[in-house]
Image 1: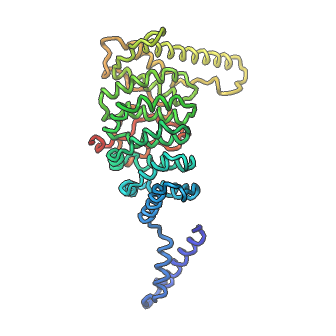
Image 2: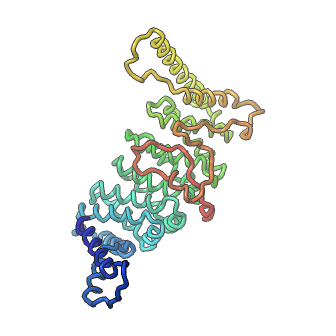
Image 3: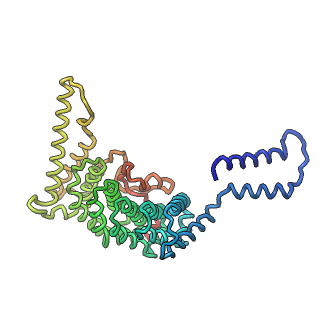
Length: 395
């Protein structure tokens, strides 16, 4: 129903209501006629949306599609339409929980894993799973108990399309973050396959998604020290070549990872990696090289300014905040083997360019949307820990 008839109906209701009593003089009240009652009920029913009933209708339709093994009723355009409507409905936390209890996520996983649906439908299905799960411990518990999260792990590995895979990683991230048991199982059984696979992709949004999830896990308040060290041991070799990335968000994350690695006194830094020495040596050499290049670029920029020649572009401008962070991390690496250095005596983690500090924080529920993982991976990545939900500590 378009907006014009809706507006006209509401206007008619308003005029009719005002016409019953102007309020400026004593008027007698008359009983509403049966005809007027019928018209009012019809108008209100048409214009007031019952999202609970609509959610049930959509879920039943999805179940019917999932049960149709012949795919005779496969209509991508119609399926896209109801999935988009569903995504808007389940943004409400109560309706999201109802949808999961109806068994809706099983239907979404069915659509996601079958290549008979077009890529848009499959990506939408994964996106909705992430939407219903994010910061919703009841939904996270349900998906964990039903084994849906394991199917997402399988789907991520099997699906080759980078856009769909990016949405699946979004769903995985939303399901496991702040859920203590899921975080531990993910790191123990799946992180060594999923994170490196994402980082090998040429699709930048997928790589950023992996960086966000890894950073969130590193700063999880419920993660055990054993799992955190296991994660660090996987991240350091994978990210060693990302320090000099052209992507600003990737460089920020790498500095954050190195700082976290030193802070938790990971012995993996002393592991020998080929002829280049230990990972500690490689990191130190790489950071010194990056810093030297930045300082050379800065000197060239200063010389250009002093010669009064016009600056053609901003490419020669230096981010002094990033340079300070590199110096800070280099200082930590240089003092790494010192017996006087302890996690408590280390300086705080470097502040991100977007102003968010990567140190663990506890946020009130009303602040949660600020730290929600952004579904649109093209937006700037927030390297910040997710809000802690006390209930997530329970299995």
